[in-house]
Length: 326
Image (tube, rainbow, N blue to C red; front, top):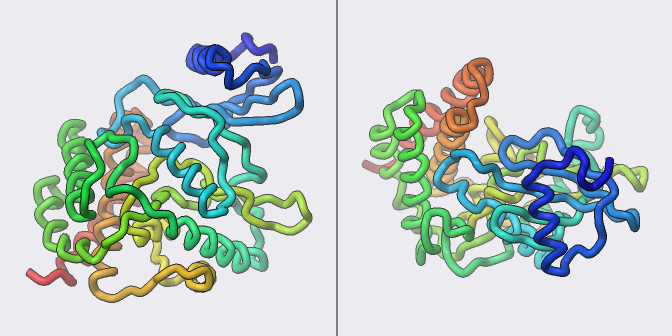
């Protein structure tokens, strides 16, 4: 399609800004939307010289408090991945509401991955995640500043993150399996465990299989890139284990943990670690339940999320109640 045909107004505005800044003098000859995203608009740009890149544009509608300036956080993730030598998109340009990145090879991990391939891929993923976790930040929290400046300690940062999503749940009148005030009270019983985190590390926080690209261009399945780092924050590396075993238990993923430890990652599941994992599960599942309202996903989707996620949230809270010292 021609550059000006069928392209969203946001895309045209972002590309005009790039051209005006002298960062993208070549006009794309083809623009195609990517499917599968749930928040930002994502489009592939194929340029006249044959190169390809990805443009993400933030939505104009309402969202959760921490979702303000998410693309700033994604750019930070890409820079951190580059420092760690982890395959991920590289930042070409970023400005608040849009982010231009290189295109990583491969397609999202799906059912085409065979059982024979899975173990090696999960171990490779473990090694990449361990390298990500070597990247330290200047403070704790979201680098976007969506919830304010970075905090000097992880307890303060996480408390603000959790309070923000609970405020969103109240504001949007989200149906939670336990009242928001009760969730807040239960989670605070585990906050002492957060004090064990003493260095802010890069956390992707959305590493479910759909955000892991599998590249078969060499004839052998390998990880082509870790994408969609917009949920990134500086915090506890253990938090990444929640989405890596989404709605499951990372302790059952022996191949991933073997790769993670092989590359120097620390993965021990003592009582403080189990409490922190329960806190991070609570946080993620609160987000998954709450975001359905401002995104207006429809009744069927809301019902499916309630059926699948709400029991997991209850289980995380029960783990805290069972394990935390009163």
